Amino acid sequence: MSGIRSLLRQPFFSQPRALTGGGILLTLLLLGLLAPVITRYDPTSLEFGAFMPLSGAHPLGTTAIGQDIFAQLLYGARLTLLVGAVAGLIATTLSVALGLSAAYFGGWIDEAINALINVFLVLPGLPLVIIASAFLRGGGVWPVIIVISFTGWAWGARVLRSQAMALRERDFVQAAVASGEGAGRVVFMEILPNMLGLIAANFFGAALYAVLSEAGLSFIGVGDVSLVTWGTMLYWAQAKGALLQGAWWWVAAPGLGIALLGTAFAFLNFSIDQLGNPRLARGRATLPARVQRPPSTPIDPQDSAAQPLLAVRDLDVGYASAGGVVRAVRQVSLDVAPGEFLGLAGESGCGKSTLAFAVTRLLAPPGAVLGGSVQLMGQDLLALSGEALRQVRWRDFSVVFQASMNVLNPVLKVREQVYDAMQAHGVTDPKRLDARARELFGLVGVREQYLDAYPHQLSGGMKQRVVIATALALEPRLIVMDEPTTALDVVVQRQILQEIAQIRTRLGIAVVFITHDLSLLVEMSDRVAIMYAGQVVEQAPAHQLYAHPKHPYTQQLMNAFPPMTGPR
Ligand SMILES: Nc1ncnc2c1ncn2[C@@H]1O[C@H](COP(=O)(O)OP(=O)(O)OP(=O)(O)O)[C@@H](O)[C@H]1O
Ligand SMILES: [Mg+2]
Image (cartoon, rainbow, N blue to C red; front, side, top):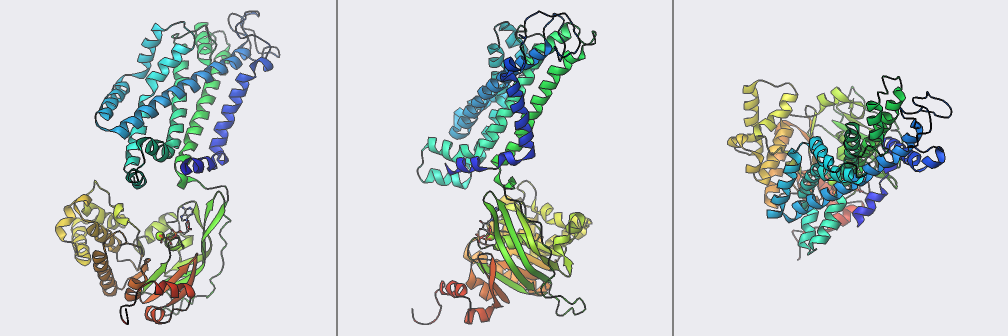
């Protein structure tokens, strides 16, 4: 339920594309509905002269048999829209029902439905429509609608089926099944809300197909040409030689109508993407432009000993959401010295990852840096963009993220993925690449022969080591690690951490290490920073923080771990 509610809350119509699409569609709809008010002529009556030119009485002239073209255009909108809406609705309903059933039930049901989908997909659409409607000739608009719906559902069903199958495997669906939710509830409450965007897009796609098919069919004279639709208008204009008579508006008017309707559907279709993908939503709130403040402690470029490797000053980061700007990082200032191991701890949601994303320039909308500065080796990271940023990435700093072992591409050998970063920075000699890859695997403790394995042949711990190896590939000055080991068991976690600690002392790399596990940090870090509600509330050398935590929140965190010595 919450899924549906949050979908409805999306600021869909604040998008220019959605507005344009919705506006055009509404205008066409109103023109059709208000046709009797706008014009007093009947679209089929033959009361005027043939091929009358444009005039006040006949804004679009008359046809070869003396009908008012403007009236035809208005009334034609009605049927054209009806065909689009109804055929779109029937086709979408079929797609949803068959696609979801196939994905949910699996087994022979899936195979049967899939076979049906395949048959409909390989049948050439338009010829099929032509043959089918030839049998239904002259029966009004319904045969056309039915033929179009039954030929237009297969593609949508295929897309929805694969989307539903992917969703089925997702953790929240599995959890719902495990918690005993019935099939209906799982399909309608868990899976369907995640597909609403896709289903709506499917509807507009099908409606567009229907309008174009109707126009195409009518144009070649299949279907009921006694009806007034934009398609039949084109048919009669062609049949009566409108262009030869110089009555180009007879062709242009319905053609433009169809083009506009197609544009409206396509625009709506695009903007619906956002519905199914909240990450694309910018929110109603607009972020204030970044305020550039001078660093609070000016850094003297001459004094290299005092110059930190990474200097974060008064960093403010926020996310735009429908309810306003969520300020996730507030006024954070941090220094990391060359080769230093800085631990960053704090409760879930306090802004650790947001800080890491902002500092490494990986923050994606709706997130944005609102103020402050980030300097790495004296260069302003927040000012870099495009090629300059690409150059600095991985060469000067690299990142290892939460569950980052999922970043390995399952269809590529590990070797190619270790090569990637090096190749992106100009190392192309195969011998050097191979030598460096072996060296890196030695560093992180993975046997060399795994270079030629695929990711699925590696355990979770090995994958994580491979990811760390790629982060080390260009010997950056700084590695930011956001809970790189939380997905692993404690023993492997500790081993990997010890290796990270060794590597960084050997190579002199600075590490910013983020975790919930304060006891681990105290053991590993030179210095620890504690975050609470978006702010760094305490920074101290690890042993000092352990012995004398100052901030009440740090004291609480410390008390969360049972002491190893003293009375039980
Ligand atoms: N894409 C987003 N849109 C809106 N708000 C977000 C987004 N990502 C994070 N936030 C908010 O920013 C705040 C900080 O989140 P962040 O992920 O940085 O926390 P964290 O300290 O890394 O937590 P954890 O330890 O669970 O990883 C949270 O309140 C979260 O709700
Ligand atoms: Mg996080």
